[in-house]
Length: 543
Image (cartoon, rainbow, N blue to C red; front, top):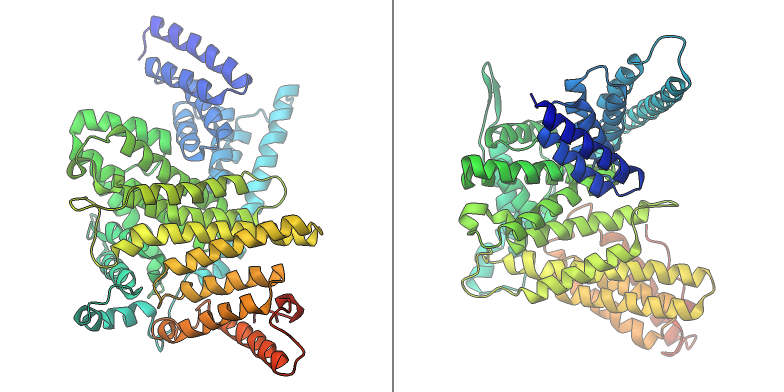
């Protein structure tokens, strides 16, 4: 228990924190509350106040942990329950949020409420209503969300199996320029991780299993996330059990967010050394990554996905800076540039999805996404691997960790400029539309050229570049060669990708071939000339 002197110092720090918080300087307020907690760690108000700053900073994981600590210390503290309700709501833990709001309401008198209590009751009831509505909505979507996660029909040979079957031939012919390498190596990691995951069992004394599952599953997704698939009805349940199992076994942080992890990792390093920190951080980062991945890919919540992705990147970049001179064997390979880059690549894709889904006022901005993409290109090109580097450089790693991130960054810039160009075109801003669409075509072409010739994304990005040129009204002399390149790429791509029912190429192949046929027919009939604007020939919708 804190002495009276320490309590007085803590009260002074709390007052300073309150002033900062009221002025909108939430980071400074958080620091003051943190210093106060060090002096008086049993003070529920300090944790609740710091939770409020975390909420203001949108660091909801840390907010939830502090609010939980506050109500543990003082179960009758209504504002702490409200902050727990708010923070858990924001990370879509709706059942916990509902319980917290109900507990907040229980702290108020049943009758004869003061004006302030009446106001608090209205706030708590509104929070409860929002959480209950959200839970009802998400429950009704559970089956739809599950269906969005990838399963492969038994009668279909997926691309990664085809790639694996090509290994001997590619090796014998010394062919390196193939997407089969990153795809098969991603699948090897992913499949091994899933096999480990399926060893997990519940026993009378707890849970038993293999502690290498998450490392392999996440490693496979970072190499090439297209290998993701689920091959059993209980797949998601097994994964959650595995996540909990590894967090417990490795001492990871199942509660709290970035600030909690940073603070406690430093403390753990002093107390137990590098091995304890290394495995705890790795387990936490992988758990967060998978929560983000499923929130995004299932359609459950892009906002939750971005919170977890941002937390992963924040911790990885912090660890890389803080322990830049510590050997990888001590701090762990999650702090390697290649690992961070691959994580940021997947986050960039999620950010683009968030931006597309955003309506009205949004925390997501085109400018931030452009910065992400440009930073990806700059960082990757400045860190070309050299002999003796610690990053993995097996066959395929060059594409996974050094080519694909730049290609995806170019494609992301292409997507941004295509959307802006189309918006300008609808607004009759001819000059702005031309500038943006020209940039979109350029970036999509650059992205396409970086992919191996048998990768589905090579012709796909050529096709999107064609769409940008079509919207620009570029002449047939420029767009027909793009069609030709697209068509000539298909035989190599079909060997790996076209048997899969979900391939993104199918509708684009049909659409572009129809358009090309119309163009050549018109040229033969003298209805068109090579100078004819491509947009004069209708482009049928993809179906």
